[in-house]
Length: 300
Image (cartoon, rainbow, N blue to C red; front, side, top):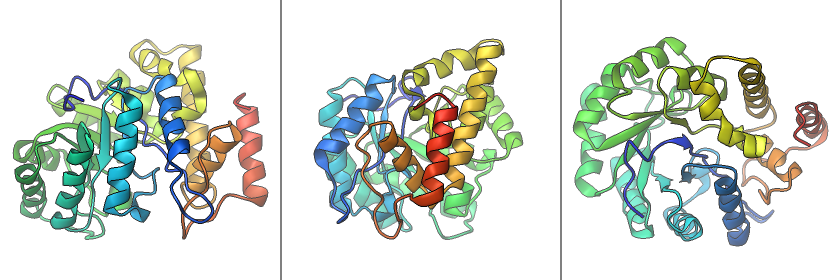
């Protein structure tokens, strides 16, 4: 597979779930099925070992294994990127080398997570070290809620100078930030939106795709999101925006994430398996609410 570029980092790029058995074992055939289903409903790329894939539970060998499976299943139809975020540069580089060996087209990398604070020099040192160690393009990942670090637009521009960044997954919940990021950098990198309720307005402002939680539940409607976002708001646009918003709130606010996403996929017939320890599968009233909302949205 050719390396990821700004031009190929477009459309829906789902962070796919990792199907586990109740014993916590990866189900290879189910994972292949999940990848194939994502491609069938219009995925422009596949992200392995991202947040939805429960990356914090995956060791290096498992990340490499999942990436190989995804690359084999994709058969060159879409690029496959692998999440390589880790607390230390050494661990990030180790993951990145495994991604390269497995045939990944690029990497998804956040700043050093769990540090809670980092100077500009520390941020640039991390990305420069990765660029020197591995010859793969990077999708930077700004996720203040998960990394503890809120990248400014100036930070992102500086990281682009220090490493081969071709895109960013932007998961800030500050629309001021999205607005200034798109205004300044949309012609330099592909901006991929994270929060689902920001997708349509961000596409209108120049975002080229999304790595989000929930759009895959819409099935083939997922492939229509980019065209809707690029057009003038209409009834269909407003209906899609409501669906994305309701789904995102439901999935993020029910149980311990990503239990609700896996439960929703299972209800729709996807072989998503169960979450890995310490997350428990969705059950009881939470599962009933999930089923009821999916039905109200016309997805069941």
